[in-house]
Amino acid sequence: MAIYPDLLGTFNQFSDQQIIELHRILSDYVSNLNLALSQRDDQIDSTPADTIAAVNDTADVQGAAAGSVRYNRATAKYQGFVPGTGWVDFH
Image 1: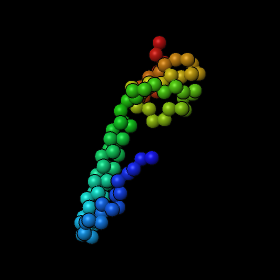
Image 2: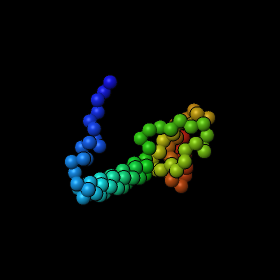
Image 3: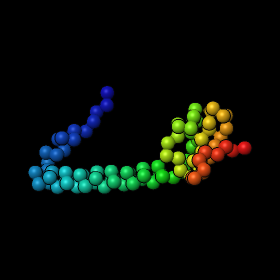
Image 4: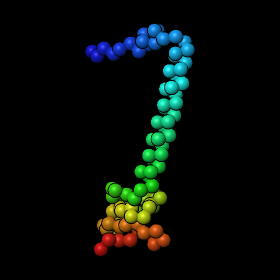
């Protein structure tokens, strides 16, 4: 069985003011990390597809961006998304 360090025992050596400051520092860090991860998620979500989605019909891919690629099982064809035109079969 694994033995883990006692985290709560570690905090007994700090004053109340140090614990409050540590909480503030950790809260700021978590907020900044959450913001950075959300921004990265938005960046990745807005890039063209680098994987191919296998779909059964045209309603299966939502919010396609220019250059997105899918495989349409109904027509057995690969398709690319062209803004203003929609899904275009690769021949």
